Image (cartoon, rainbow, N blue to C red; front, side):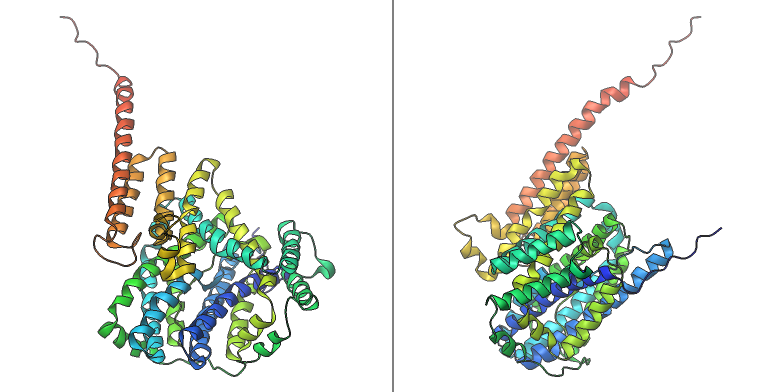
Length: 510
């Protein structure tokens, strides 16, 4: 007798926790975008009337699609515990587009509107590239070791998510530590909150109230909150098309930034889909990369300038027990909040230190998953793959001044921070291969790393031939060493093979 179909709910209590985690993660990026672009000299009409609505359209489209995809998987496997993939703007990619596309375009054109159009075109091209990359996504996923991919993601989680958000938590120690304690009790230890409220909602309400009661948050926050309220309709425009002409006639250099960061974005999606499979929900990585590319292109049609990706917060949502409701709610709320300027208002009212501990948990869960989903013998590979992101964090935060800032610490920081995702994956993959005594495979990864360094995808500020010759040589030397051990391994195995062969019988006597 066939089992009755499982009921996969549209929304459940656990979706509330996951919604706040994803919403706050995205809202932090939206606020950074607004503050940074206004500081660069872009007018509020472009920032709040074009860029944020375009980003909201991309977020809405992707979240709605992944909610539908989760329901499809639930029906296919007759399960009720499927979690939809989180979707949003990648933090490292966001910073690269801010300072590697928007800022140079603004400096070269001297015109904020032209610079915005160039960035929209670059975003559209990035989406098209990622959609094309989806054709080989599953092949790449099959050949890259899980420890390498999840180690790279854990590096992002440790630095950009858990680490930075812990810094933000401690900016208001009394409030931040209180909220962090609530998160640990409710989400880590899974103890019910008073009145059975979702942990994230309870933490935000208590933390915000306490911040105003003890004076850590002043009344001026409310006046700032309503500065940019208004109506910003989500309407398509031709900025992407006009920007293409500008991009290909005078600003081709921008594409040297777009290509590597798009490859990074595609790999980030692949890594996060891999992490979700390790947590129990298997999605098609090719489909996800194609959807991310399509979502980015749709966002560009509405004026957005930032590529989107499957979010690192997905595993955190899985740990919370979320379904598809949090994804649907996130897409709908972002559309409404952006149209009426509510994102800036919410960001001004709620102190960062109140929401930061929620994202600390997301980072914690991502790091824990990287280890829990791999055999203990691969732990060194996971740990090594995490390390390049320390350098990448410094590079991102200090931008063009990073070289001067870290010059007295180590000259290797800047080079390691450039293309950190690629370095993390390749160095992790080499380590996994060596652990398994697959030295030829390790040599292949070293050769690919050398090729990436040669063309500037790693350890170089821009794409160019012979961009990082010293790193190219270094990886080739590593490959040669691995080949030597492969030869030694085969040499030692050869006598055993020959001795195990049956000897031929002596000729018969006459």
